[in-house]
Structures are given as C-alpha cells and as structure tokens.
Image 1: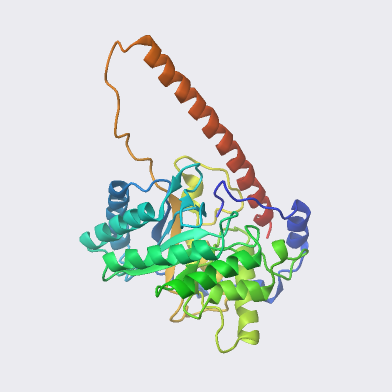
Image 2: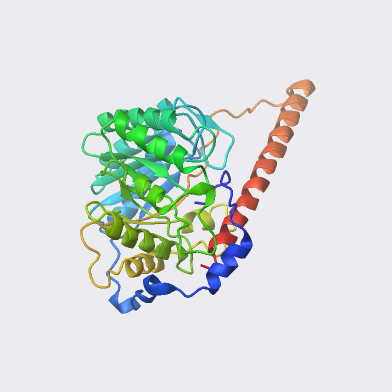
Length: 370
C-alpha cells in the first residue's frame, strides 16, 4: 500500500531493468479474459484514518449495502490501523501523525463488526491490521496485537476476526517481521492475514533489508494458520507474478504447507479518493487484478476453495467536527491564538503530506513497469 509512512528504497534503475526482462512462465500463464474464473464480488476495506466508533459503524452499514447489492456470499474487510508506534500495540494511523492505543483500535473494529451484523451483511472475515514499518515492529508489538485481536473477537461472536500484517521487505528487517509473527502466534488464538507485497526474485536486485524467499514464506505462513491477501496494485501485473513465484516456490520447498492465497487486495479507491491521490501504474481495478492473480496462480477455469475474496481499500471519510464555535465577537486575542494554531497545524500537515506524496511516487516508480 502506498500510505505516506512507507518508503521505497529500490532504485528506479532496478524497476526499469525488471520491465525489460522476459515475463516468464507465470506471466505466460495469464489466461484470456474469457477463461478467467469470475470474481466473487468486491468488498470495501479501509485505512483507519480515524478510530471514531460512530464513523466506523456508519461505514459498515454502507459497506453492507454495497456487498448485498453485489449478492456476495461472504466478504473480507481489512481495517488497516497503520504502523506500530509502541511496544504496547499502539499505532500511528495511516497518512497521519495521530497515534491510537490498542483499546481505541479495538473499539473502532468492534463498532464496525456490530454494525455489519446489525445490517445483516453476508458472513464477514474482519482483518484488523498493522504493518512491519518502523522501530516498534517486532515481538512485543505482535504479542500486544494478538491480545487486542482476541478481545475484538470476544465481542463479535459470529464474525471471523483475524489479525493482519501489511508485511513488506522495504519496511523492516526479516527478523523484525518474523519476530512479530512468532509473538502474535504465541500470544493468542486468532489467525492472521498477510496483506502485504512481495519484491521477490527473480529480479535485477535482491530483496531489500536482507530478506530471502524463506523469510517471505515464514511471514506468509506463520504457525500454519495464516493466509495471504496479496496487494495486487500494479497495472502491469508485477505484483501478481511475484506472488505466483512465491506460491510455486513454496510448493516445491514446503509441499506439506505451501503459501495459501485467499484473494486480492486492490487500492483503486484510495487512488481515486476523495481526495484524489497520485499513484500511476499501481491503481489496477478489481477485474484486471483478479485476472492477473488467477493467471499467475495458473487458475484458468476454477479459482479453487481458497481464492474467495476480492477487496478494495480506501480512506475513511473525515468524521464531522464534534465542537464548532458559533460565538460572534470573541476576544481578539482568542481569535489570534486560534488562527496561529490553525496555521501551524496546516503547515505541519502540509509538510507530512508532501513527504507522503514523495513516497507514493517512489512506490509507483517501483511497480508501474513490472
């Protein structure tokens, strides 16, 4: 995903070289549109730019209307709460400088799940996710996240609640990601979903931060209960081919427990907005993404029992202001203080967003030619 906190350290030259390489067997296996098994309908997933329970409840109600209109038999929804911000399981919310404690994320996820049930939506897999980005990614955060997800599940009987990890090689060392996974598995009973990306060989450069295919496999499988919902963002098919290579490799090296892919995650909604964000080359929409993934996995007629979900992630709408001053003729000093604070906040936010935009452009450069 392209949220502002991520950085892409792969050089642009690597992306260009990759684009010039032969597509390989995985790409050749991509079927014609007529042969692609039909997608299961597309649910909506969300970056948690807010943990306001009322906003999450309203969002779930709208999502159920959309899912029901498509006649979906079941749905998977990712609530991405951002990056680790403390060993206690706290996070920095996506594309923001705002921090949320595990209890706040729990309350938001529970509000979403209860509203989904109240609206009589289809059976739901609710993935409450974080990333392996930053210095707090590791075992203590994974353990705290498992306990939080366990608490969410206890409040949502009838909902398949799972943890989630947006695992990416550019975010951390493999040790940090594997430590998160091992601690998560050891600290709770709820499985997790790896909804990350894979910069996987063969490629003109080795994976970032010392990762190997064995590391990617370990994070994707965990204790055996994990599943993968890969980011399929590239319009050229690079994401799908990369995961196709991982699955093929795992079947050879770990035939007793290969990587299990359960669907595809796209980000067309996050790109189109509102507000509209620049992500050329990594804004593939649902049907092409489904075709890319089924082709890369060699599923030309039947997606099989595992490949069941298609979801698109976008940003939550901004919650309404809870307090708005309607006083006329307030003291000038108060007005000046408010104005100064507003200008400072605007400047800080502009600075953050400029950095985020730069990182999104770097990520697009990495994938758009693949």
